[in-house]
Image (cartoon, rainbow, N blue to C red; front, side):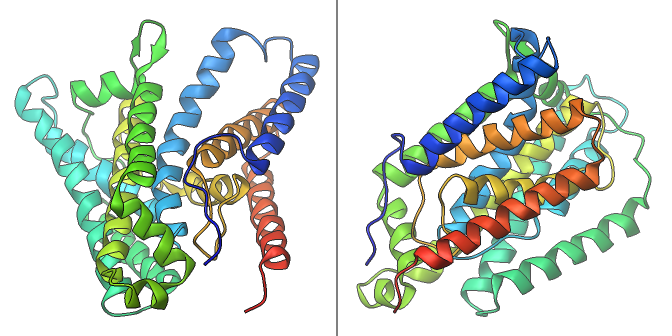
Length: 319
């Protein structure tokens, strides 16, 4: 088996990303004088928190050598269901059932993805893409392409748009999710199993690991992370809206592979993913300042994925 990194210390990709971020900060500060202000940087950190939570779940699946393409409509469906249950009475305690339902929807979608990939042995790219399209159809049938008349619950609003001692609550939620992911990968048996299955699934199975349960677990975590991001985005925007998850699919994958995780599985550290999220956020901020269209951002994310996959393909040892 290839050596894998269970540590969160700075590895090679993380150091390279740190240098790139310093360069971007220098260029951004020279181009836009408020770029280095604490208020602006904190705002970018809040924006990065939404992507960071999505990337945390995406990394769990990528470490297994799989991919989750259902992220966009998992986010949208969870947020739509949550706000629909909140309805027009967001101030009551009953409205928090929407938050629970939204998180439950993410768990259910992740479970469906995991079962399809692990037990039906359908390639994850195909299965999750089909899942994404089915969820899209259900949401459109339910609400059309228009936002429902609903609001986020008080907890969703507080977590998505509120602050605690000057720090956005969304950042604190990202920190809590990160702590859970780090503990899982570094301190738990399941984390070791994830790396083992991603490195070579048949060998992991022969060593006594129930590889199917590991795969299902990773997809469930990914679905939950997407749902959490959907709840925070709803609280931040003040409502759910159609296709709210679309901007997070490619950036989430790009952040993970940019941080040193291999799309072939078995290799990657969470510190690299966090660094990748911060770099992607800075790049997006720079392009926004330069008034670049959304298409330019998507092109950048796609180029990053192609370059990193090509790099790992050349570096991977021959079987």
